[in-house]
Image 1 (tube, helix red, strand yellow):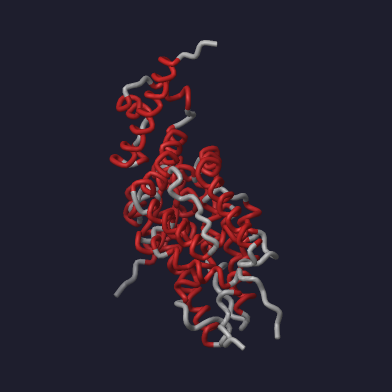
Image 2 (image 1 turned 135 degrees about the vertical axis):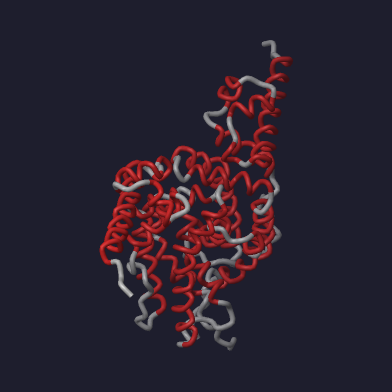
Length: 197
Length: 197
């Protein structure tokens, strides 16, 4: 088997250029005004090259977001669930109140009228983090730091919901960045129940 | 002073026709495809009549939503804060998973790229309910059913956030309608703290 290093390198260069172009344009002009034409032109590729890998501008933009996010919002496991949730939510809210959030907001807005794009939002960005959060909560349950009688899927909603609620309903950036403070209040209801004395 | 009953009646009829037209069209064709032209044509008025009262299609649509909502999601006060929150959130989630939600979702989507429209969303639909919820929580604090050491503005976020999180991030209607079940979990952390024994 002979690999095709040159063509692979070309492909990777094109992919890189497209992902950079979509992010820069979405930050600069706003996601709503972004077109596949503009992305192709800035990346120096033809439109068919973009459509070979992605179905629509939302899908390209989501991939560019995931690249920027990288593992910057991975869940730490220091053994202290409150501290770890605060660390992770702080990283999330910093992203959401910066350029990544600006682009993500545009995509989520478009997805309100496009169920297929909403599915891609969930699959590429939201659901992987929900799974990571559940895994971290599972280990907190195992360590006896969190109730075992409530599904971790429900707990995840309680921690993430204030972030998205404030982010998507026009609260200012400072309010979004205060979300990690809510971790303690939510955890109060999620600590293991001690028997009544 | 002579009132102008005939012209007032005409105005009221036109306003009524416009509000009905915007809601029916937004439900039927989808909010994203709605135009001021189509609203004017269905309502049998000229576009200037619409622009005399509203600045954009989002503003008309929000008024039509508020009319449909009416006082259907007012906060009851039976003296039991858990029951009252559940009653109100059940009414909210029923609206959000029906025609009202379909139109509201379209407006919120557009508002992600239109800060002025987001402000109108907050002022006309969201903030009045936040104030009502805070008033109900204030009376629960006074009754000793809820902690007095946490601002009710923060509590409101905890109750409403899961609703909007699920509604705007592509969760299915059943998940949205299960939000009232979370009231008890959130309240666990908001009950007055008893001294340690």
